[in-house]
Amino acid sequence: MTLRADFPSLPESTTELRFLKDLPEYEKEKPYHISGPLHERYRGFRTNIHYESVPQVPIFNLRGHQHKLSIERHGFEMFQVPKDIAALDVKGNEAERDRYAEAMVTAVKQRLKATFALCYNFKFRSSVLGPETPHHDVSVGSSERPDAPAEAAHIDHTPESAMRRARRHLTAEEANIYLSGAWRVQIVNVWKPLGPVHNHDLLYCDFSTVRPSDLVAVDRASSEYVGEVYLLKPGRHYGWYWIDHQTAEEASVFISYDSHPGCGAPYCPHTAGRRPSANGDAVPRESIELRLLVFSKA
Image (tube, rainbow, N blue to C red; front, side, top):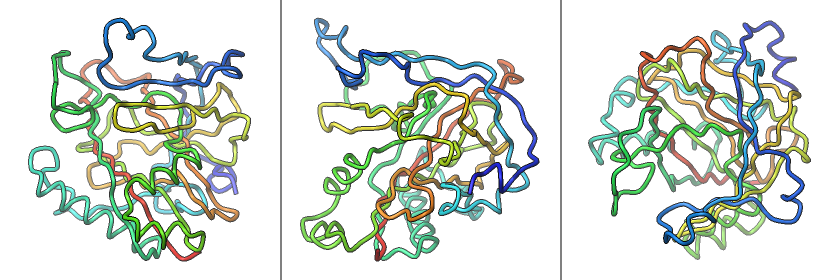
């Protein structure tokens, strides 16, 4: 069920990817990162995460085959976004952003034959950030203060944090129904560039090349919430894939958690990857990412 078996003859290039450094100290002290303001005396304790870059990692271009991808089989696929939805001003108009989110929730719900779905988070990213200035009331990941592309191989949720996330965004009545064990719980990401991508492409990892021992649980803490993600240890056994020059009318839809994956994909590790051939004049990569909770009968 590997991507290599399904797509044996793809164009290959290489890039440098970043992973969590495989340090003995993480067996005794859990990796963590604290977001948001910290008093000066505590800034040295913001994180204990150390990364390791692996050069010349092979990546395989799925362009021309993207219509054959399956979120169940491969962990990710592409949605063709209608022109009127892709053209919405999601950065500058809140009503149009909400309309885009509603359209994507409906599309994912229909595709996965779900009973209930909701968008609990959106995040803007840009590969070119403005000067660092105080933003007292503007959160990172908003259209006014986009986050940088995530350049470390990761999965957005561990099983424990996925269920915690679901409880956070459901009403008590909804939680009693959908978290009873009778329902399939999925967390699905919908990532769409705001223009053609010329660098910092989204890379997807073949889940079947990932071993349980490759995954390290990492706390992501803020004043509002403590989440838990997986970072991947360095390795050359992973299979990495991308789709060349993704456009604003193509949305990547991938799994971050699945309570009932069966023989399919339980998650899709991913990261942003720089193109060695890209020059400094490349158009900045801007994107919007939605995170959805999706519930179907188990």
